[in-house]
Image (spheres, rainbow, N blue to C red):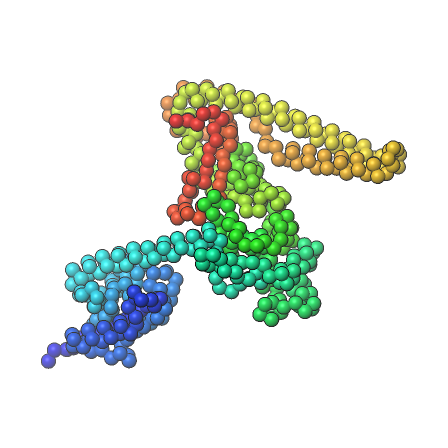
Length: 500
């Protein structure tokens, strides 16, 4: 008497819709297949079901799938409606089939009409797995595209509304956020308290003591208050999963009603400790003095990749000065942009005429930089002298102004402002390098690539400053789906006609 095969069934559906095969349909098909083949199958013991769980995501736990694999040695066949029920990820499907083969357990697909108990079946299973992985990727891209369109149109993503705003229907579908006056006033009150020095916890306690409550009627918790006050939604910007949504121009999308103004938001974030003063090390950065943030036209500062392979260029207005000129800011990996600019500059250097032009421009730039440094330092010294003289007059009580003390105080305030501005101008000035060497030797080199590779960052920077007026760095685009640097983020503006 022939020994009957013992079979297990596995059914899975992530999201039920009209095009999907329901769990009940899969179970009926599995039971019918086992009955037709004469395999031993008990739906109460041998059926494993994962409902509402994705088969394409890495970190999704499928308890019944894992239980079935651990019990696989008890069976001769695993029956599924389609191979993609096991997994939509090609690598995981291949690993599962290989694991089961080692246990001498074949996978049988009802819909595809073959199993892995033959070489042909295993080959076809791999092909079907590849198609399933492609379909899963297509689904992900469609979802991302739909979300991106939603964000650009300024539509709220849905879900629980944030305190301070309510949802308002938009023409053509979707909703946007509009302010609720009573709730907005409570948040503005909290903003002022924190800017004046109160902690998040202390602010929450004071709001609760005053009888204020969330829209659910519960007291304010420090965490809830912190989440709202740290969000750029306060500026009307579209925030998804605590991240800003950007438009095709690289700037944040601002479709919602703002609760506070930009300058107040900067003060709030500084008080919360969210915006820290970060001053990257000066010196050694390949693009020092030529890299600029496209959002605010501010300089970008960085350190040398020779000493730090993870170095970044950062917008000084955002990361260093905390002056509110650039709330979003721009940063970019130094290794990537340094390589991109180096390749572009090398193409220029390989033309003798360009090298001679660079040499002249370096000497001219150096002379201009020295002149500018001397002028700014003289202005700073004059401002210090005037301010010091006024302070000394005040301390000695020997001043004599026609308008009296009020005129004196106005002059002192003006002198203080001039001193601050002059000091900032000198601090913001790039370090003037020593008198540059002539670039004529470059015209006699045939292997310019080798010379460039051996040169120091300081030597390369001289050449780049001569050839390049500025490098505009844009924020990362939401449309960029690949790893590495998006070349469209970087625009090189040459000092002469752009090289052909």
